[in-house]
Length: 110
Length: 110
Figure (tube, rainbow over the protein chains, first blue to last red):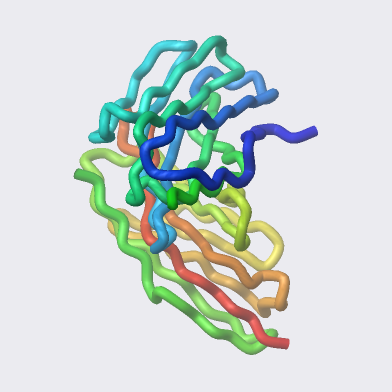
């Protein structure tokens, strides 16, 4: 009964590759988010979609592109991966205020 | 820009030794202040939302309070299973995103 799920949990790849992370929520929420947690554990918002419409697009390199095929899914595609992209990426969803987070995807760029 | 500062960075407690974590914030207009717990290798787990100064919420050994400038998370008679990183976040009025602090890592020794 996972509320917010992400795949894969771990992703190890070479610099310059393109990769995707998938997120699904079964909570019936309208809004979904991508956060990045760096090595110092600091969580920072990247993107948010509300009913499949992009509503938050923080200062993120345009190599990162979110896509929301429907309300329950939000994917993150990253082009031309760089060493600095190594981090844990969390998906979250919310209905009004409280946000519920997925288990995270640890991305390691070699 | 919204700012959240948590202190201390780390807290080591003996089992049963009560203590408090601090979260200071500046936000243009507060919609809500959120507390999360994060265990190693997992996503943040929602604990509390506080909406207005003077409000208090309790859950087992945890109690969160809110003033106009800060929030406290009190841990009463902690147990080793309370060991985790506790994250504070604010949401501004009319905004969707959460702005997080860097967290306080609590270690409770038996």
